[in-house]
Amino acid sequence: MTAPLLDNEFMKYWSKLTIVEKESLLSVAKNYVQLKEEGHDTDELRKQLIMEEREKYLKADGKSHTWDEVKDMAANKEKRNGI
Image (cartoon, rainbow, N blue to C red; front, side):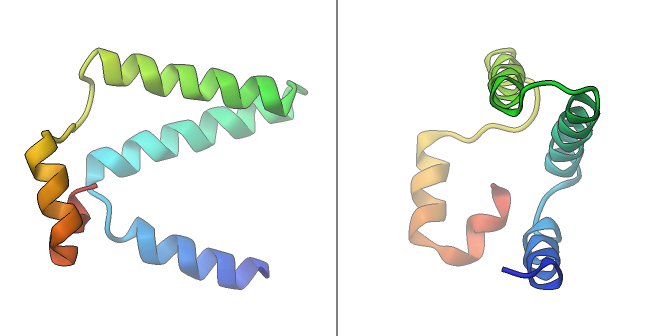
């Protein structure tokens, strides 16, 4: 996939995110780029980012959905902007 197509696809999904979700993803991207520029191993970096996101999830930092909300979004495409 070429860069302009990838950018367009990214923006399509980005526009569907809430401000909290955008802040979370921006934080991940910033951390990834900063650590990559410092010469960290990308596999280790991915593990670190996953663990950071896991910690946020376990602390209930940010939006989470109930099982019923997830099922409802799975059945109703128009409600999927919530994730």
